[in-house]
Image (cartoon, rainbow, N blue to C red; front, side, top):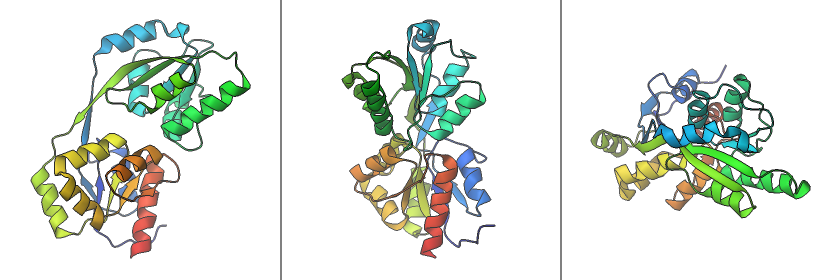
Length: 257
């Protein structure tokens, strides 16, 4: 059983409800939670994804960088066609796919876009004849790391929006009141877009004030780099899963008490 940690509430910036997965993980560890969803996840124009999935047999690989993309694809395709290889950026995303009968053949140990590209580079260096036609269902605001990195390796990448990522409507006044109190324990980030959108919503001055008093915790290296770009040092989850993000936050707060 985890020892009690006496700290202020932990901010969850991902798009989830009061019974969402990260919130549950944090509460199970005895931590209180503030929900500050910096982004909202919605439905993208379904036509491009549907068209790509109609021709799924023409691809050698399909690459997933989030569980939202997995959900959008599995709504339309129950199982992959024979011969299609599947890659996932993180172990949590891979677990969702495996649970639905999709064998995942490539998951980088470090759950980041850059690590995924590096894994492909090593694989293709060993087998120069392996197919490089890739379908990449992604966020409408996906960073270019995966698509550009794979294209630089000689792959033909078809990137389609599987879901829409937009700024959420935060109660900025309430957020600033919490920042002024200085009682927030930590701030969790599960995506680079959550970092950039919270900074935009609060303004760089208040964003910096928040993170100077409440240490940020990132789910992976890509998210950590976005925090660095905003001048913040952060802790990084050992594994790119929500469970690990919660445990890293708990251990950080425990070490500060």
